[in-house]
Structure formats: structure tokens, C-alpha cells
Image 1 (spheres, rainbow over the protein chains, first blue to last red):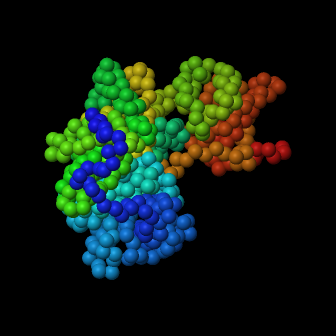
Image 2 (cartoon, each protein chain N blue to C red):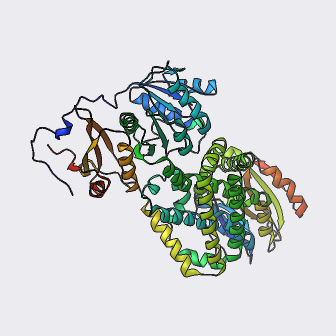
Image 3 (tube, chains in turn purple, yellow):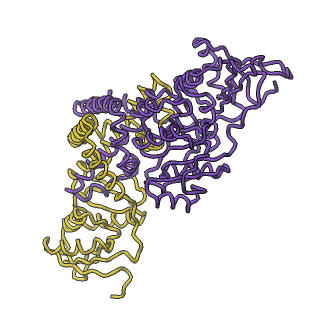
Length: 384
Length: 240
């Protein structure tokens, strides 16, 4: 359902009579903690956008190399930064984030985000309006800075985990900066993020490592084994080459979801074993056909500009609304391609503007009233 | 390969034939033909071939399909799930997109090896589950480190000519010799880059010429006398 407005109807919504918003994507000063694969790539990508990027690493030489490689403009701590990206291993992040918010020496408006693979425990323990938990779904089997690239995030899904406490302006800032470096930002509740990544990231990694280790130990008995490993095996085990040291923290923080998912996988593999042992060809064909169709459907869809729709949602100007709406969009499988918050002059209401592709817009527009949010939508680029 | 099974030729991965040897000459001609189209040729006993491909091909395929089907089922409850599927998941499930109809036959013919390997995998995954549930970080790090090292060792390596050595093995011109030597070579983990049989004029003896990479050559040369073969070796391209 696309509601078009009369052309040339000059003013926007009443409640929106609006404000000059700070340009949320304008290059500023960023501070990166941890200049490995992700931190280094964020630094490169931000610098390409004109940011001044400072950074440190637990290992001084790593920060020095990041500087040399152009991922940083300065090695050191910039307390004036307006965006702080914590890209350390999961368990080191909390102390740094709490330190930034706890110290008066840091910019009082700084927005802080992190890139850890598990969100629930960290987000719960930081609990600050200007902290927006994040997790880029991009990586490389290459370890550390050597795999870093300013283009790592182009087209990659980047999850943010706003909560009821999150300042909408802080969320919008992080979201829009990430969009400028090419990421598709998606909002999820922290616990939901953790359950989903157990399925698409953590358990696949553990499975790849298990398969690689199994083949490698069988290969000790017969050196021919690994010489037979063709593209399929290589594809399947590629992620197992990644850095092992990040996994104990992840497995610690997301143990419950990982164990549940491993149980499902072990159970399903047991079913597969039964089908092969019983020569149950019909059932084998069924599951392999289903998997084949699902895998072929897993392609990137990048909508063309003419397919974009702007959904405008008048919202009370209070905490929690943004998290609720962005999380709803993710649950519906809708990718938010752009996001803007227009505050009203009176300050108690605003308009949340989401840009989505035209196929998804009707789903979103029809789901919003159930949550108490009416909305209007327009194709992007039409005159209002 | 009438009595064998061929794998897709792709950079650096051997084309596999199982050898039941009726006459060495035809086999050697096939090997030469395959080498000419860019395949690395490796000889394996049929049962051994089946056990190995269960590990590196059949079970990985079934595992990729299982994982894809699991994620797809869970994705019906939450549409965000498959949007989170990044390169790692995509790499892992890529082979699941393949044509399903070939698999019932493969699973029928290689059921025993596939079931054995699935049992090993399920057991190993159960061990992984225990490590995560028990927060056994030391043991987790160990297995992930071992897997990471093994995967990084699994790189495509195409030897340059200056890295190649020609191993010349005088052999009696009788059935079974080629299969024995090439199977030995494979068991040693040595890749045959090229193979040639030079028959002597008298017709009862010949010379089997294997081209292998220079690092593997000493292993081969020292293993051959135990099977009753003498050999000489020269870097490729040197004057003899």
C-alpha cells in the first residue's frame, strides 16, 4: 500500500515541522580500540570517507602497522572523538566501553559501538543510552590486519542491537555512518541476534573446524586423503583457518544458543545417517532437494533506486521506539536502507523515516499499526 | 577411466582413477592423456578411494545440506536469520546447491563408508558440544588451533618447473607394476605431475619415468627399494 501525497504539497507532516538535524554522516573523528581485521577495516573505510581516525591495539606493533597501512591517521587515544569503535575481543570490550562513559575526559557526546560476535551479556552490562551494540557479519579467513580492507563491509549485513534505553540519535548516527561504508544495517534484539548467529556463524565455524580436524587426523593414516580435497571440501572448511583465540570468549558468552544449535545439527546428521544406512532414497532426495533450493535462494538482492520507498512513521520522542520499530523490520526480514529521525520543534514527537525496497514496504506498513504506529509511504524521489 | 570414477578437474586437485589393471600400457596412456589436460593423476585401490571420498566429499556434502536445511527451517520463524548469513555460512553451504539427483546412487554405493564417517563426525560434534557446555576453553582452543593449522596447510600448490624432479625406475614389463608403483606414490602423499613409460628395445623391461616435486622426491626414492625397485633421480631440465 503506497500512499502518495499530492504533488507540491510543500510542507511535511505537521508534527515534523522540523529541525535542522546534525548531518549524521558527516566525517568526524573516530577512535578505534583494537586494530585487527575488523578494527583495521573500519579505520580504512572511515578514512576513505574523510574521517580522522585514531586507534590503539593491545599490541603496540599492530597499531603501528595499522598506521603504516593507512587504517589510522594517528596511533593513540583520541578522547575528543565523536565515534568510538571497540573492536577488541569480546571480553576486553566491556571494560573499555565502561571506561569511556565513566571518564569525564572523554567527549560527553561520543557515541560508542562495538563489533563483538555475542551481544546479550555485553549490552546488558553496559546499559548506556549512547552505547549501540554492533556486529558486522563480515570477516575473512585471513587473520588480523593482513585481511583488513576498506571494502570489507560493502554489501555486508551489520547488526545493531538497540534497546529501550538506546538514544535514537546515537543509533541513527552509528547506523548512518555504517551505511556510508557500504554496510546493510539491521536491528535485532540482543538475545535474538545471539540465537541467530549461533545458527549462521558459531555452529558453522565449529562444524568446519570439526570436519577439518577429522579429515586431518584421518589424513595422518593416509596422506592421499587431503590431496583429494577438492573445491567443496575447501569451501566447507575455509573458515576453520580463522584465528582460534576469539572462540573461547564467544563460546562462553553464547554457550546456551550454541549448545542448542549443535543439538539440532547432531540430531539432523543422525537423521541423515539413518537415511543412508536404511537406503531411504526418497527421503534423501527430499532433504537434499530442499537444501539445494534454499541455498540457491540465498543470493544477494540489491534493489535498484527506483524500487525504493520511504516509510514515514510519526513517533513519540521517547526511548525504546526506535529499537522496537527497527527490530520489527528485521523480524519481518526487511532491510532498512536508510534511516532518518526528524524531531518536531515542540520536542515531544518526531518522525522516523525509513527507506526500504518497494517489495518490503507493504509488509512493513501493514505491520506497523498492530504495534500502534500509523505510517505513510512514498516512492523515493517523488516530489512531495 | 572405464573402471574408475573421475572427479571434476580443478586447479591442483588430482583427478582420481581407481586402477584394476588389465594391461599397464593402456593405463599409462590414460594417465598421459589426463596429464595433458592438466589433471594431477593419482592411483588408489578402489576401497581406499571410497573411504577417502566419503571423508572429503560425500559427508561434507551431506553436512552442508543438513546445515542449509536446518538454517532454512529456522529462517521460516525469523526472516532475519538468512540475512545474517555471511561469507562463512555461504562458503560452508555452497555445495548444497548442487544437483540432488546424483546423491541416492552415491549413498547407495558408498553407504558403509559414509555411515562410518558420519558416525565419526557426529561423535566429534558431540565432543565439541561438550566442550562448549562445560566451558572447556583449553580443549576448545586446542582443537580449533589444530584445525586452523591444518586448513592453512591445505593450500593450492602448483609446482614450478625448477621445483620438479624426474624419477626413473627400471621396471619389468609386466601387469601390475604400474599400479603398484603409483599406489605406493599416492600412499606416500607424493603427487605425480607427469608419467611416462619407456620400453626397452628388448621388450621385457622398461623404464617408468615419474615427474614429482623436488621436496617429495627423496621420500619416493628412499621408499622404492623396499618394494624392490631401484631408481635414479634428476632435476627436470638438467642434462643427462
